[in-house]
Image (cartoon, rainbow, N blue to C red; front, top):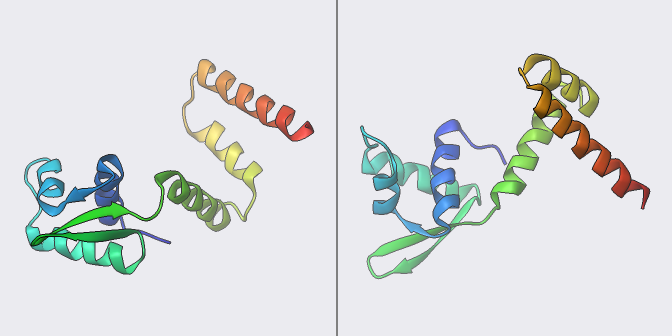
Length: 123
């Protein structure tokens, strides 16, 4: 599933709330707030894509995520690796460590994570 930047932004508010109403979503945005019609359009697109669902609550709808943020993030990163790095996680890791200015502490933390994964794969 591919979401636009605006859809991802709205999804982040929905993921944070777990269940929310359009009014609360609009309130969550900083000024200048988007138009009600803009949020309604985004909610319709997200519903059509299967990213969110809703339940009727009187005259309102309570929206909730149908996909977990971690699942979307994993899919997004895998797609990026396929698209930009010919499916090579190694190329992605090389690009990431060379082009994202990581501190020594962050690099050591990454190494520890890799070591932990290596140990877990040996079991």
